[in-house]
Every structure is written in C-alpha cells, then in structure tokens.
Length: 73
Image 1 (cartoon, helix red, strand yellow):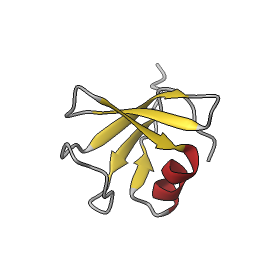
Image 2 (tube, one colour):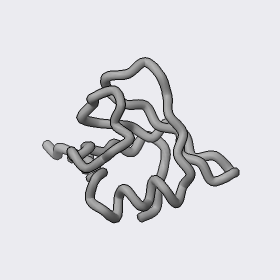
Image 3 (cartoon, one colour):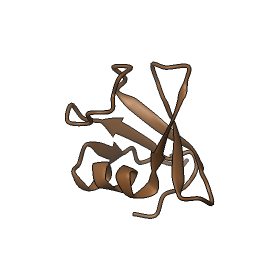
Image 4 (spheres, one colour):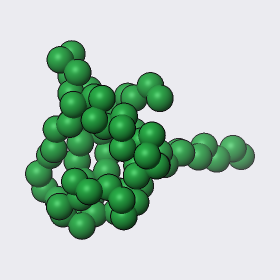
C-alpha cells in the first residue's frame, strides 16, 4: 500500500503499540529517511515508526485504512 500524509486508520486490538488506548491514528508525515510520523486520536504526542514496521501492521490487518467518502449532490 502506498502511504501518504493525512491517511487515517482504525486500530484493531492486535495493534500492540497502542499505548494511549486510541481507536484511530493519522499519518502526519512520511520522511525521506523512511519513517512514518503518526498522531493517535487520544494522545497529544506523536509517534514514529520505521516504514517497514508500519507496513507490517497494515498487512496483519491491525491497522485498517479509513476510506474518505466523497458525497455527490
């Protein structure tokens, strides 16, 4: 999965790094060095994951992307 800024994910119970008991997280930045900076919804602090580690949690279905629906008139 290609990751980008502002992507949001639901965190499943199997997401072990969930120390703030949040249910969602958002990607704040993907650095050139291969890190993913995230913000959990119940925390004022940011976290950083290596890109491959973040992809691992997605592949395990511990992080499930929230699809942004666009409404049409």
